[in-house]
Length: 152
Image: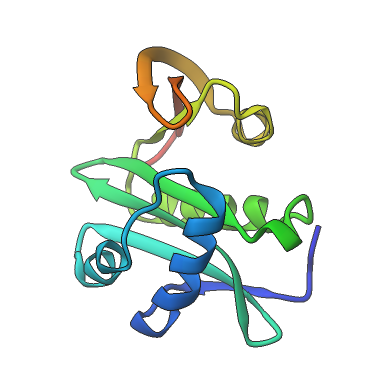
């Protein structure tokens, strides 16, 4: 696992880098304006992974009542498979546990085996399927949940 960098809360100053990673990672990327709105959204929690003064990955979720809905996790293609996604997911899970969230949920492309493997390694379980949820290319979404025990 990469140990040189840090995980910290995303700021407005990170949005340009986050947007670049988003465009490299998703066929239908969020807009830069969407990320600027997320920085101001009191229900949104976003973390970035920074190494050598450069943002290499990000992860976000919405804290809705007592649940966490993971919106996106992405790592720059040059830095994938180095533990950055794990570090970011750890940050989301730690935030959730510290803030009384009972569980985290997300949707993932059924063909995104590396992401599914990452989520399963943290204890996420498949809970459902949304057929034809994604376009460009078409794919189903697997709904996954991680529930926390003794979260009080």
